Structures are given as C-alpha cells and as structure tokens.
Image 1 (cartoon, helix red, strand yellow):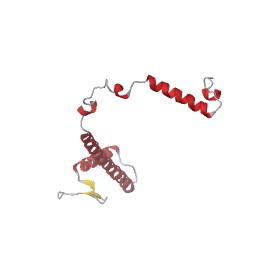
Image 2 (cartoon, helix red, strand yellow):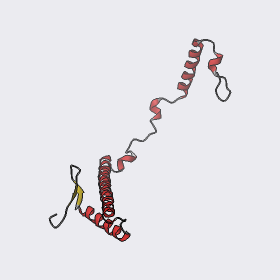
Image 3 (cartoon, one colour):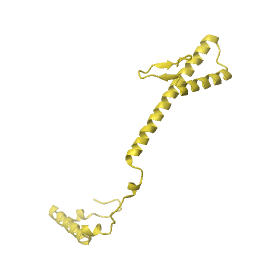
Image 4 (cartoon, helix red, strand yellow):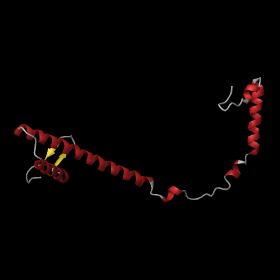
Length: 138
C-alpha cells in the first residue's frame, strides 16, 4: 500500500504482525525519550486570572439575551397585529367602495394603527384573542 505521495509504508516491508508491533513499540519509545517530562511542560505556565474573569459574568450575559429575546418577541407580535389589521382594513375598504384605498388614507391608517398598538390600545391577550380598546374607558 502506498500513500498519495508515492512513498512505501513500513508495514508493506514487514512480513509478520510481530515485526510490525515491534517496530511500532520502538517508534513509540523513541518519541517518549525525546519528550520532556509532564511536570516540566507545565513549569513555565503562570497561574493566575484567566482573561474571561475580568469580563462581564455569564449570568448577566444570559439575562441580557433573555431580555433581548423578550423585546424581539414583543416587536414580532406587534408587527403581526399591524399586518393583520392593515390587510383587514384594506379589504374592508375595497369591499365597501369597490376600489383600492387612496395613498393618503393608507398613510393615515398606518399611523393610527402604529400609535394605537404602541400605546397598548390594540393588543393580544393571554388567550391569543385580539383586543381593541375603544372610547375613553381604556
């Protein structure tokens, strides 16, 4: 058997498994003789604070991630509410007037929906029902 570079492996030249194991043990022992003892390897390493110990604790990072996820999910829900109501209003206008809504009314509708959703007049309750508060009794 040859390697991709065209070299012949030692295992091809050896005839018996005993010779192969003997050769491998010799190679392994040669490598171990050249290596430094384990205690000397760690002798040069300074023991002290790691780089991460000065950084923000991981607990705070997890809290920040959770808060960011909550904000993201709230914004996603608000966007879904807006899309649902805006498309429903466009369809209602078309059904009533038999033509599409003019651009100035679309802009007006968008701004009204955005304001009401941000103020909390339009929201989804815990059950998942869309609630629209009307009038002064909010």
